Image 1 (cartoon, rainbow, N blue to C red):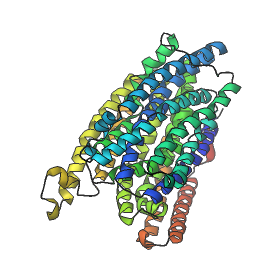
Image 2 (cartoon, one colour):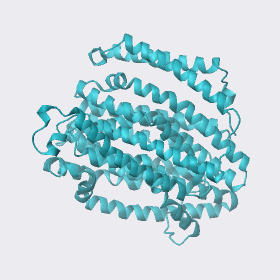
Image 3 (cartoon, rainbow, N blue to C red):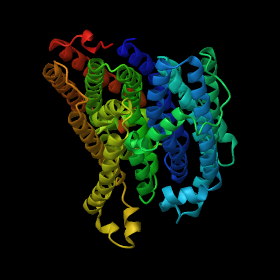
Image 4 (cartoon, helix red, strand yellow):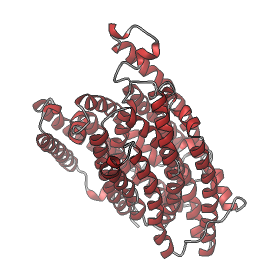
Length: 532
């Protein structure tokens, strides 16, 4: 099956989910604005969501898919069914314990990941209460990821990609319908997250039944293939999810910054997830089963061609997306969120971190392609080393950039009182966290790329020079159109809503057409994206 066709199928479903995600964030911003309550919710949501990325989209998937692909191709259907049952039982039992610890130890978890809220008792208690409700989401969504991994191994990508739509719909309903009916309105978002986790799992089960793979979960700690999955999964926790680890560390540091920083960073992350989720995650999801099959069948040429296709496609999409997000950060934020309780100051702050974090988009996307090259060969050591190095560098740069911005932006009015109080009085320091994450992603990419060359995993295919030149020329055309449009149209927060929507649409359409026209004028053809 063509990987391009699979990627487009996955991307189309993910695109629907991401668009609804934007509508979700617009609804939340309009109803709640930016406040200590929204900060508390995003912290309470980010903690289980971070663990979800590790178990669902990160370490678990990268360990589970190669093993299940191998069993599917080399053993009987009964053996495959047994493996799924044992894996579900073991993963479910472990996550049930983790969930119980998270629910009953919500205050301790809040102290660890949001220490800056300890000095604000109301905010701290609200965060803990929200976390008790959102934490069980981890259990249900991780089991959903297991069933999605099974479907992906059968080249059925659409259902797994469309499933997150449920979360967005539930949160929209929570913000617009349930919140006005509760004494503490922000609690509506937490309840909507929990309900969405249950509904997502229920949606996947009929598809497993049709494949005759649905059975009761059973404990399988001693099952040989389950132990292989666990062996691969544990060290890959960092290697496959370094971006999420960095964002969680950002959460910890942001708890010491001015109120609103958590919300601005969360909105930035959501906007970056649109191109990264639609294309970066789609590429990684589609290419992993393909690379696993080539590895099992010892097809080195097919392995190299599949990886080469993934790298070219990721670069073709992520580079123009990065340039567009950096240049259009303020118009995008103003158009999407400047209404209701969301204010022009929030536009400035969110745009600041979006521009900074978007600089890392190509690296984020390319890592999504490179990491499966190691996981498909059941090599988790190399990605974890690269991930840990990038995480350490990210932490160092967090303090460096936040400290530098603090010294540069500190005015005479901010030079009295305790140091922490001075830091909490200066808006915009969260941009240093976003920039650190972006630069750390390039270190992660470079380390993985160097390992590919050292181990002889990747053999470059012909045509990279012409592909790069065409891409650079097309990006130059895109940037020229955007800069001209931004020069003509300024002061976006002051525009009427309809005018912002119209002008942003013109800019995106014009830059997109300039990019595609230049790309084709330089010799690019659609057949260049075909891969089998």
